[in-house]
Length: 241
Image (cartoon, helix red, strand yellow):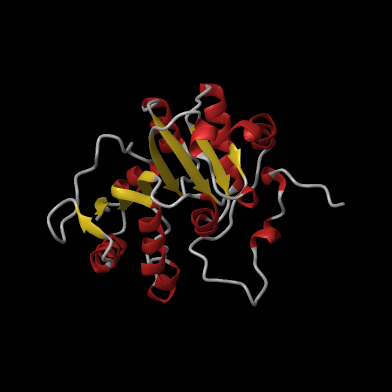
């Protein structure tokens, strides 16, 4: 029988689908897993890690309570998500990231913090939403600074499209918030158009207006990078209706 691999040791080839099953990806696999990250997987995956093949999460069982639940998609190296986990111990956080180094890094940080309000998937968010997150279970979904795929021919790779928004709506509670942020103006406009077109959401600001950065969202390195390049930053907060 083939030995099951730790998520931090999986060959990157395994993220590719066969031609018949391949779909447009909103990300490109990058980065190498350091020895420290591999050790973080070994030390902390059993406590914080979730596997898609295990099916639907039982939040009460995993967290041991029923509290405000936040799902963040694509947390990068996890600095801002880790900050939220530590700053809001009365909320429960689920992180989803495809890049093994980022998952390894946040496992290191969360492990050092000894937080008990965090779970993580190293997997494609589309599969996690479909197979692991119960319907009407989340209070907030966060999508901060996703890859903007700024070239026009790559816009089809942007994750914010109607099928994705529908999948988010399905998992949020009524009144739950989908919070998006980007430092690319064209992507912000694209996000606004897509969100306005979706019947499941309404803007918490006025129509076609962006929101102020909420206090709970830390300033990320991507945001600082964008500001240094003269970019603006746009937050969109839409409520499920």
